[in-house]
Length: 74
Image 1 (cartoon, rainbow, N blue to C red):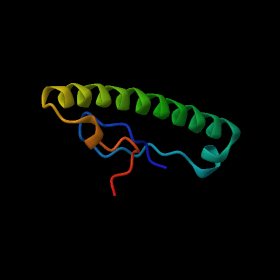
Image 2 (image 1 turned 30 degrees about the vertical axis):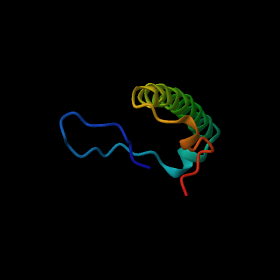
Image 3 (image 1 turned 30 degrees about the horizontal axis):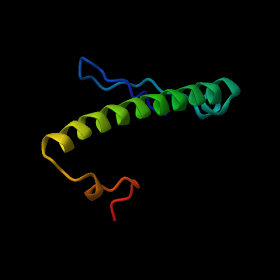
Image 4 (image 1 turned 120 degrees about the horizontal axis):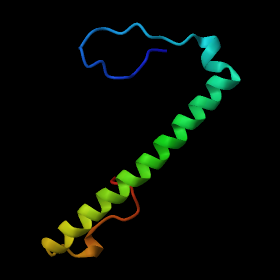
């Protein structure tokens, strides 16, 4: 796996993790921590998005019943 950290110097990074490290107990715990962090950030971002959209709905006088609140667009 490659390191996904952005390199400020725009150089190619060669920082990798072996498969053995990734599937080890420590690697799995680190992955679980990252996934939990991503879930938390995702929830916070979605809450901010909803707050921004709610303000725009009011500002543009959009009828709330015209908005799909079920989460599927198709």
